[in-house]
Every structure is written in C-alpha cells, then in structure tokens.
Amino acid sequence: MTGTACFRAALNLLSETPDSGAYYQAFALGALNQLLTNSLREINADRVAHGQTPHAVPPQLDALDDPIPADDWLVRECFPYGLAALLVADDDKAKFNWAATEYTDRLLRHCPAELTGIQEMI
Image (cartoon, rainbow, N blue to C red; front, side, top):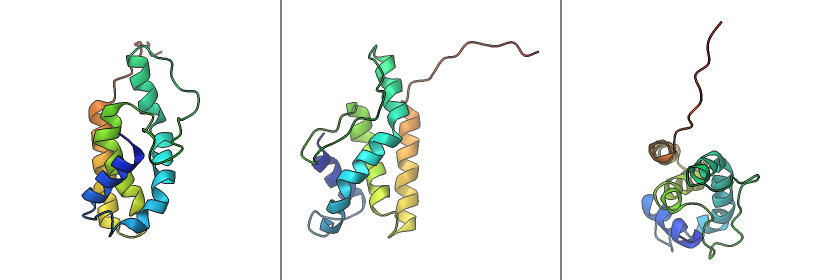
C-alpha cells in the first residue's frame, strides 16, 4: 500500500473525501513517518517472527507515492486508523480517541508474542 492509498483510507474513516480532506494532505507524510517510528517494536517483532533482521532505526517513507515500508497486515489494517488519529488530533478529540483506540486494538491483535524464559524468584 502506498502512502497515498493509506491517506485516502484514513480520509474515508474520517468521513472525508480527497477534496474535503485536502487540508490534511500536507501532514500525511510526516504522520506516516511518525507511525513508522511509533510502530518500530511491532515491525521488528514481525520481522523476527519471519526470520528477518530487525531494523536498528525506523524505516522512512520519502514520498506519499512510495510503498509504506512495513508488513501488509500493519499497513492495511492498522495504519489508516493511526493516520486518521494523528490527522485530527488537534481538531476533533472524539474522532482522535476512536481512531487511536482502533489502531491500538488492531496492533495488539496481530503483534507476535515475545516469549521469555521463566525466572526463579528469590
């Protein structure tokens, strides 16, 4: 999914059209890069679960027309909600709270568990 497609999905969640939501486009690239930074733990957990090396630094999106550098499940199911939340954070607290909650809930449903050894307590 490209940044533009994710932006349009976020606008749809906010009941906006590309024309009525044009104001938000200036903030979309920065917000998507913020989501990539905020989701580094989940991105790396997914990479490790698939036998890949985790990122040392968050991946970046250079332009909205580029594909978002994260797994498809994260980008398609979670990022539109996270982007919607970031775009309306200052304008509409109710929509922000709803979209942020959806983003978090969807992340938790898909993130692989981190298994740790049992430690004895002394």
